[in-house]
Amino acid sequence: MARKDSFFNTYVAGSFDRIQSVVRGDQGGTAGTRSDFGFYAACASILAFVAFLAIAVPRMRAYLDQRSFVAANEITIRFTDEPAWFDSSRHEDVRRAVASAVGDGSSVDPARLAVARAALQQTGWFQQIKQVSLENVGGFAVEADFRSPFALVVHGGREHLIDSDGHRLPADWKLGERPAQPHWVTINNVQAPPPGEAGSRWRGADLAAAIELLKVMWNKPWERQVMAVDVAKLQEEGLIVLTRGGGYIYWGYPPGTPTTAEPPAAAKLSSLDRLFSSRGFIDMGGGRTIDLRTDVPSVKLAAETPSTGN
Image (tube, rainbow, N blue to C red; front, side, top):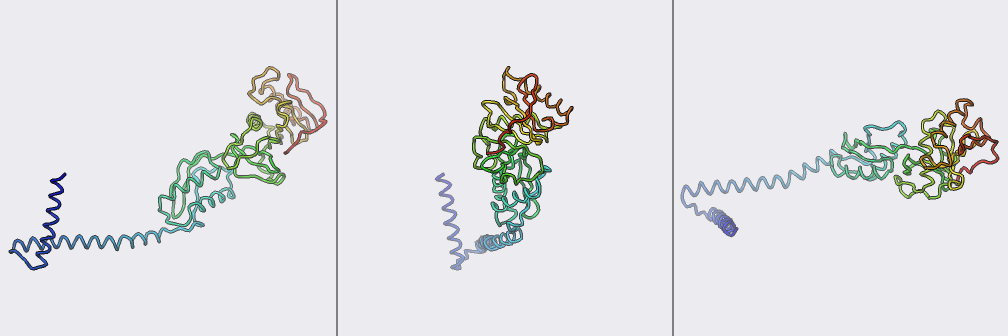
């Protein structure tokens, strides 16, 4: 290392001596003149190149930044596999969230990708953001797994949308003001309050029990006759289903609960299938109590209705 440093120092010192000699006019012969001229020309070329970089590159960068500038309100979002239920209103909400996070700037700035990805995840609509890529001028193409709406949880005078795993989605309505379509069953009287952030899981064994019941009823031909699942008496009488006809059904233990005290979930579903096939209604036309907790379901006129909110 010492020898390399000595060589470098000697070379630099010699270079300065040669430049000084040229400036003083000490030509030192024809060979020396040619050598000094070549050396001086090389130095001039290097200085010119450095000057070019110092002046031209910033100007070129400024030109490119100006040509690629995009305002936040012009940012677009395109999902590669957008589900039908994710309507234009929800799409615009997500686009605005991303635009607000990314802000004005260059459309080719790669840092925008990480910011957009984080903003998408924070909306609560997605299980996973697989890929975000730049598209067109100021746009993003997004490949993601969506969290699908599954049911509504009534709490604090509002109806909160959740997915099939109990994650709170970024949509809620004042009680009685949600759209009539699509059809979502409400879950009433859960104990735990909603989680603070959209996308977080709503805790509570009562909510989990209601979700499991709705899963076994999913896509049944009579599913739309189910209006709500009440969990207020879960520990005493089990789950109670409120029908659109004004009747209610004592389901009992949550599906999957090991017990010999009640028929299994498959037998209870078969009972509802038979009622629907014979009467067209799982509550025999409404105004009745159907008790599925015994081997032979009992039917009687409803003396009361379960609570429908908290």
